[in-house]
Image 1 (cartoon, helix red, strand yellow):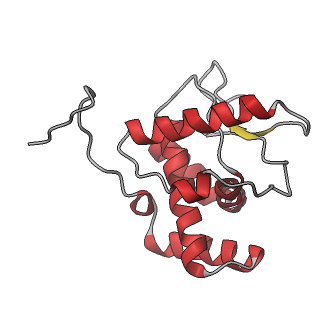
Image 2 (tube, one colour):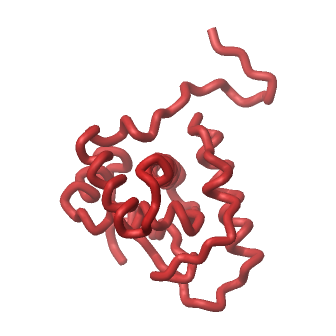
Length: 159
């Protein structure tokens, strides 16, 4: 029996690395480590949080969630493996989870608020948040840390 003191129903803890095949997880982790000169352990943490973020996107339709700059590195790495990413999206969300980079110069306060929304969405789904990867000042070199899930009104399948 699960007991919670927050007033919310208790949820099972989601293990993000188990959302994909072990070999794919290892391949993606290795790519992140090599591309960004990181330890395999750190890259694995990034990949776990990427999967957790995408799980939250899948289970939070109609909301705009945003990854941290480090988590976005994992999303960029995963999305480049188009077949595996597309299969993952269909299995987890029943639709493609679009990556929507924002233009540089966006509203920093809004970005921080969306990060908070993302963290809350993950926690509400029973996903452990690695706060060190979410509360970072690192900059994303590809989209200036302004990427977001694109929850289009027609289910995310159309641009």
